[in-house]
Image (cartoon, rainbow, N blue to C red; front, top):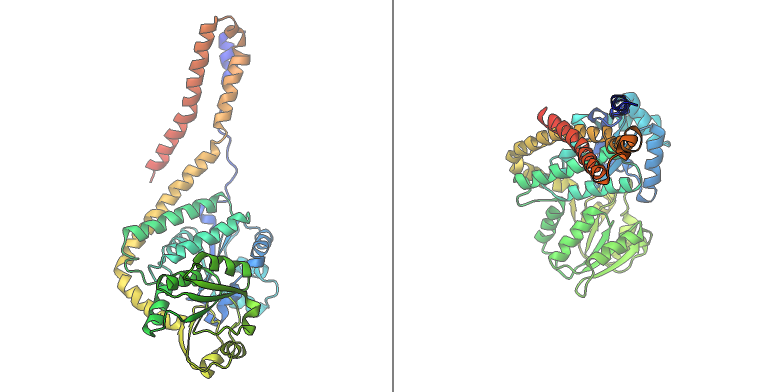
Length: 439
């Protein structure tokens, strides 16, 4: 066989990147179904809460039954959102279908209620929304940093359950980067006034003594932050009730010390608690009030002194009859909303700067996605090039190479190794430069 024939044989084996499968993870396939304090009556918001104990399995069934590709569920005290990817048309028909699969027990009227009170986002609007949420621009209190922790925690839970994939990983990475930029490059969080700090300010204004007994219901992010805030300012006597005892014990362990005393109880023991309290704090996602008139009466245990009740839940954890019947000083979300409005007015001039960052982040995400598609399309390049080199040495040019002396064979080997590295890196670098230049 002539050398020219060998070259023709080798030419037919030259790598041509395999055409990637039609992607199901373009920005246009990003969807969000959102239920928040802005759109849903407070008394009904808890309907969209998925219990932590069954969350992983319910979301897995929801993902499977609706045929969506990736999914994560965001749950806070005042918002429940489903962030997912699908190639399916995102219309009213799909929304009803999704909600039926979310809760098979809902009636037609309940489905229509959910449809009418949902906010939906798609494509760049969905990307803008999740960036806004994580940056606290869509929060009740603009500038609160707790939300980014809640977003990351919700994503991590869904990721650990195998519900998310490569696309939502990229979305979350960009979301965190964007939020960090907003918090560091604007004054949106200067002198931050979060729900936690607003609640503490109200408590402080009532001159509550540091030795007061504090009873807390719920061990979620909001209560955890408020608890740490109270410890920081000198409070030391706590009793924590939570549906999952292990979570209450974990929260207690995070603050307990020689100066701070914490007891943990399952929520089922709340109505039997006789330890007394001066301040009751509650924030859960229960759909019905946990602190009923009967439960509150049992907690008082014939103590007629005035108490402070901080209810940060949406819908409220405290039954209206409790407020009407007993001598309490109430701090709740509706009252904190007034303070939140003032907070927004103070930060209004920073919103424009933050929106600029969000716009830049959306453009940057499109570049990130194009680069990722390139990486996926060319992921087989290194292996293919090594196959070509091996074929050239051991097959196509094997006879000619065998006739060379050892030093010549070593030189050819080094030349091919050098060319292998360049054939892998140079096309990738050139392609990246083209993508980055094509804004």
